[in-house]
Length: 137
Picture 1 (cartoon, rainbow, N blue to C red):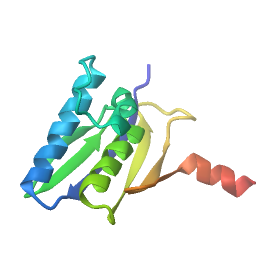
Picture 2: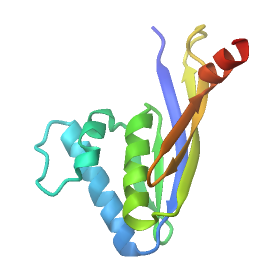
Picture 3: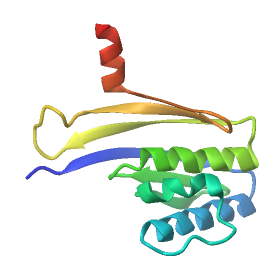
Picture 4: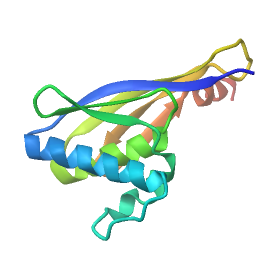
């Protein structure tokens, strides 16, 4: 049996410790909801659907920054999470990151990756397989 992985790792700088604390608390709520806990009344509506795919980690990194990373994916959820933070704290900001797909054994469908560019109003992603298909068209 082969193990499949989707890896990403990036840091977001925030303006204050309050913003960092908010981001970590929000992530912990998403993770708890993903594991079956009730959705708090004040939880952001735009993130409710993203909780199902919340299989990434968030940790405090340096002063006022957070480190987002995963070995198991959660690309859509992390994009929604980042977009929420941008809309709340940096409406004119943007965050970009890359991810990779990998496998513990050679498989024809196991390798690739992609990239995301996120603003407060838009999420653009492109996978390497989409890019290769576009070249064939």
